[in-house]
Image (cartoon, rainbow, N blue to C red):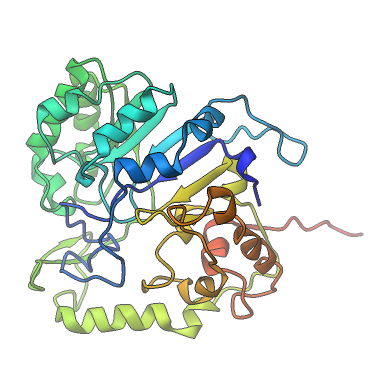
Length: 354
């Protein structure tokens, strides 16, 4: 795995708090209030400065250093990305001040957010050199609310316009669902008319299914109607947790013919969670000590002294070697990390023989 001196990108989740209630998010279950073990926490400006020092920031804008004899060119982005596994950037108390601190060091910043919180003045202050803000806008006002529950489409547009008018860079981020695909061209045209610098389709595996209120009452469906979709939320949550814990789930895939095309290595990136804990990537960063999540039972014993508020960042990277060693197992059942296989497992090329 990478050494600290080789890191060129940081992926950071400032907070596990969020105003939204997206039904496929791990911080709830299908829109109902359900915490599967994540802590409510966030990084303050003081915490951030403790971990992300001026020396580390200077490293992020250095020319790429060779890794294993080659210079990575994946994605071409160097700097810091704020994107949540669980929380939204704008929910963090010191989010703006943290970005201002980074901008003073000329490090590029990319923010992904639902954009519904704060004031227009707050968003204007994010119009800083090198800062790009991606706003989650999944359709127009009538369809956006079906997935981005508890956010306000009109406020998001207002905030994006404030940022743009102040000279900032905004990107329209659109997740296509069955209920909003017909609006994509209208959204693209609106993005262009309002001055967004780009329009992104986000294909990240979000699925269909029932959506519930905070108290567990059936609300509506994302995608095609399915039999039994209005089942009691308690039964669905029980199945949800059991599914995560099932041995068959963690050992269903034969991985003998897979190799690990590791994003952490390719991107020269580490992930820092909202409690200061450090992981190779966001896929492994779902609080393995506390949270019901695929592969966490396998991952938890490997994680050692990884909180950068308690240990040096270099010390926090040491446990990554356990991940790479675990790749040598021939199956998930024997200990090859599920998330590594599911995210970065690539078929090994088979050489034909005659």
